[in-house]
Image 1 (cartoon, rainbow, N blue to C red):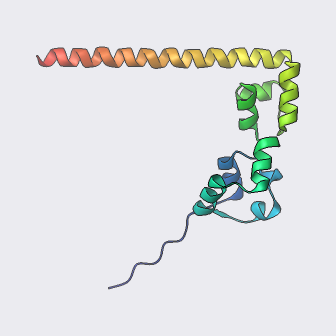
Image 2: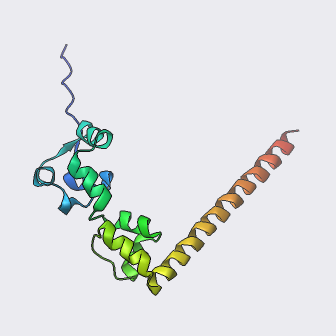
Image 3: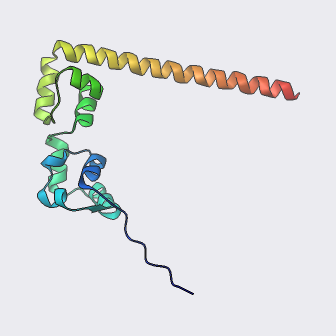
Length: 140
């Protein structure tokens, strides 16, 4: 009978870990960018962020998904607005204060998309309830 091999820890590329941490990879320390990150290391970074990670999360530069979220627009909306690079918190705050026309438009678009998503979800709930009601009536 053979003994089972010990399991290797699950690892990920630095880009994947940075994405999960919500930080811009190029702004992370070199040792983070050059190594691999285990699931345990990622959990430890999330549970007790070191100074560099806390600083990146606070001040940036932030990756596009975080920038889009902070501005209240989609990633596509960022691209349509000409924002293709990572932005710092200061740059994001400046955009919010300036509120250019493209940002106003994209925020309105995102708001409509969210309203439509809620409407569709409600309709699906109603349709499911009607279907369940009909199925229950058919058994009686």
